[in-house]
Image (cartoon, rainbow, N blue to C red; front, side):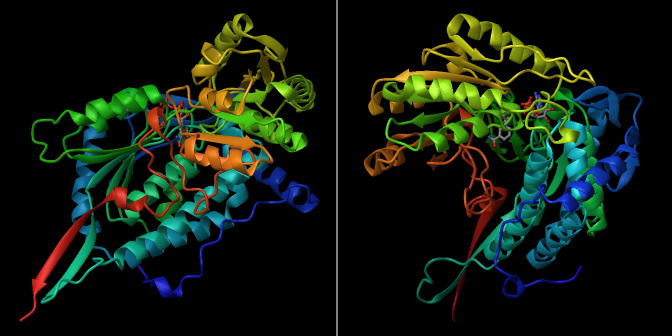
Length: 523
Ligand code: NAD
């Protein structure tokens, strides 16, 4: 592999978004979807130590907008294969940990370059496997490129780190060395960016990985691994196994797994935390967990704010990708002085959203699967008793028989209602009335989560108060609460939203390393 030095790299910049209003880009995106359609239904192997492996059982990943369309067929790893993947990663660690930071960073940069060339192709996989519209798919691919570029630079920075002080008469060093084998367990909703981000952070620090993607998005992960291999990834550094909770549990428990990088639900994150805390026979370290979990994110709307911007921001935050973002706004807390007008205008904005096939780039699409459909409909039934239905509340039958649910808003919801406390992870928004700014802040902080939040106000004093007391990992002023940008908005939440790992930030890579202090007496 070729070497790169920190000095030869241009300053990090976020990947620009694609302008899909241009006729040329529209045509290119349609062509990419058609090309990828020709590849649907292929069978993908597990990859352990660079070798392709099969098993006796397979599962299908389908298009949520058209569940009859099989996107990919994948082998389900056995528990034995999960262990084999960990042991293979452990063997590969012996060499990979000795590779230079410059070489590992170069690998990420080459992968970023390849992904840029195939940007629309990966967008098309996201459209077809998880139902993202073009803009959401573009943001996912762009974020993935950003993670690769950003972590390459961060790894070089960390490699050049030293102790803050040189003790007189000594030469002092501080080296950030890798941990060992990591289990990388991503969710389905950012199946490229988050999956690749946790993987890239692990390997650029010299760790090796067992990657177990979500069974709702296995094909995107298989294509990303192929891209890493093309970029020069040595065998065994990333091992791909597919399957559900049993496979995930098997790697989390394995005594040779040194750390777990997980993003997903609160329930699974808590379970992983507990399982990882129990030492296994033969395990001679404490496992580290890097856990990013759910949210119940709130936007505060003050009486003195730009209401047009607030309506647009709340609508985008709540219904972008159908509310299937950890950062999605699921509660909007509105000052009583503007409550009625806000509700009327929000209803109008939400009803103007177009619902339909992501391949046709409509604003809102299907939810991911049958289980999600049922969960969201169950919460809508609960919401009918907990609030006043402003709009939505129904399933929508569209060609393709996708899992479509109309964007749904309940008004007059009590802060303690279930739909105001529990993560629904779908297109359902609760509107809560508040009599004062103090009360709004207290309501915002009244769930067990603490991921994102936003406030719309013209008052500098209220913004400053929110900066102090709105207890979330990612707080936004006069803008939506979704759409974190790598580098500018390091991402991660408080409380039951996770371990606040701040992906895309300056502290993230240290989580994937351990610091070794070396002191030499000068003679
Ligand atoms: P999930 O928790 O159901 O699954 C996440 C991953 O864990 C999947 O790969 C799954 O197969 C695996 N898994 C399931 N049970 C397991 C077990 N017992 N042991 C080990 N692995 C197991 O989450 P999901 O439905 O894929 O994603 C949606 C959730 O992710 C939402 O709660 C959302 O808020 C959260 N999320 C959080 C962030 C963040 O940065 N905080 C980002 C995206 C999504």
